[in-house]
Image (spheres, rainbow, N blue to C red):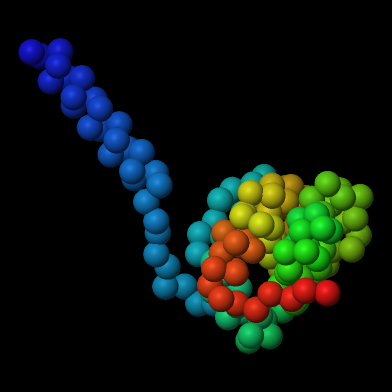
Length: 148
C-alpha cells in the first residue's frame, strides 16, 4: 500500500511540475519591452507576441523585422510588410545586411527557426527578440499579410 501511495505521489508531483513548465505567463510591459527573455551567450533573447509586434510597427518603433523562412514561404504564404527576408540557412553569410544599431525582431512560420536565429544573433552581440508563434500567430490574429 505504501509503495502505491508513494508512486501516486510521485506521479502527481511530476504532472504538476510539467504543468508549471508549460504555464502561460502574462505581461503588462510596455510595447517596446519583450514579454520575457532567455539567456543566449552574453546577451538575452527577448520574446514578444504578434500583438506586441503589431503595436510596435504601428507606432513606428525603430525595429528591424527579420523573416528567416524560405523564399517560397515568404512569397507564397505571405509575410509582414515590414519584414526583410534572410533565410535561416543564409544568415551566417549575410550578417552584413543586419543593422548593429537597431533591435532585431525575428519571425518565421511558428517560432522555431526564429528562436534559432535569435540565439545565434544574440551570441554574436545583436539585440534580438523572437516573435512567438510566428506567421501562424500573425495570421490567426487577423493582422495583414503581404503577398507579392
